[in-house]
Length: 261
Image (cartoon, rainbow, N blue to C red; front, top):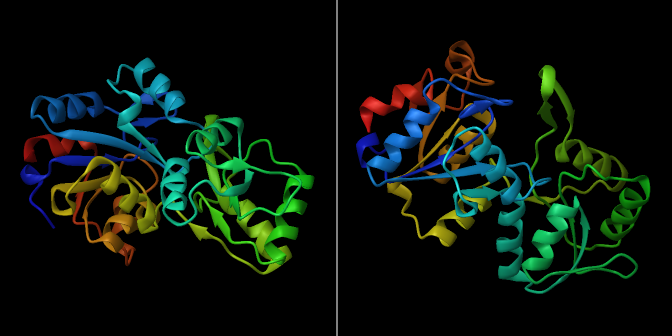
């Protein structure tokens, strides 16, 4: 655990940490501006691979949050970085949105449909069809390496509802093939390692901030990086007290972090 005044970069979850739906959390903008004034950095980190960095920047800017594409890092980008280390330019059978497909092609991968790929990659595919699932299962049963961008079972949407996320698609494929993927997103260390490499960050000068114990905080715990829980989203104080996953710090909101910077 590093004293907060020595942290030089904050890896920030978004929904539940900086905003809720389309509403800024009280004090979030003040926190971000304070980080900038102190010549420190923040990077928004998300498991949602259905959108690209541009879509998140548009949303953040629309809420008055200063951000550029280099300030956002998704599990989709983590997947491209990690896969390029082991199979650069590979033929990929990708279950993903057009935004994720663009990200993979820009990273030098070839997307294939009708021939055996080098690997199968599952993202949060809101364009999913039965034919896509069937083809993926056939490849996976045949022994093709299998990866997924993130493990979230559900994605929150407007009105407090949820829609099935990549984790639910993982469960479908597991029921059919008995196989589970290598997962790149939180809480797995791959996403943090990819961020560290891309931005040249130092672990003991970086902290992860989020509202979910089993993704945000567990990422920090498993990676040995300072973790900060905020109680503006999914986790309550009582849940934090009961959980075996313990953050280094806990605050009511990111606004409460400001005096410690």
